[in-house]
Image (tube, rainbow, N blue to C red):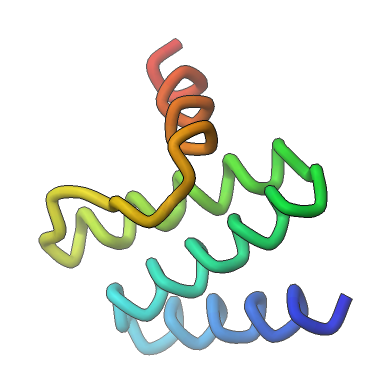
Length: 79
């Protein structure tokens, strides 16, 4: 859909320009959209990418990603 297309463009620009905070935000918002559409696997990947970008930027926590999404992501990455 159109919103996801724009998030993907923002993610690409964030990667190209190494603007980690914006890369994290674009992935976070794309993950929330995917989660709202029931696309759990895509949402989890976006959440992992957001967490990675925010961590590289120096952030220590992400509070605005829904708890279920973070819990699912944590469970997948810890196995």
